[in-house]
Image 1 (cartoon, rainbow, N blue to C red):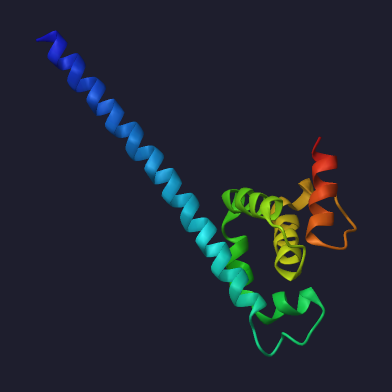
Image 2 (image 1 turned 90 degrees about the vertical axis):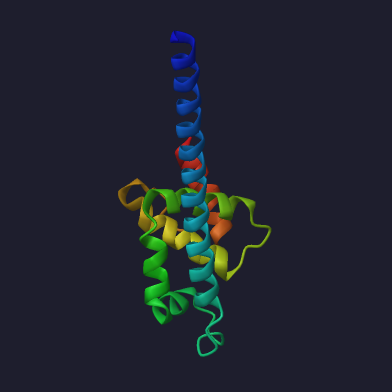
Length: 128
């Protein structure tokens, strides 16, 4: 009798842990998807594509940029991971770095940077 209760309890706990792990993964995937869709929307605006100023892309898609900022701390983690793993160092990476600086707020100690990868390099140095 006690053994059956113990087994049922262990099965219940296992189920709860599995559901929590799946829920966290799904949330991270949702945040990553939101960020990716927003970035794509920003960098593919035909009217702005002639500009070489990255801030024009942010100004041209304020709702998309706001969606990135609304992802909060989890979004910051996703942005840092994406920036780290990106093989590019272009507009998209610049926007990711800019969003990261805003999400960090006063915890951002990088004041001058020229590209997304440059910002990330300096951020990592200051973080250590």
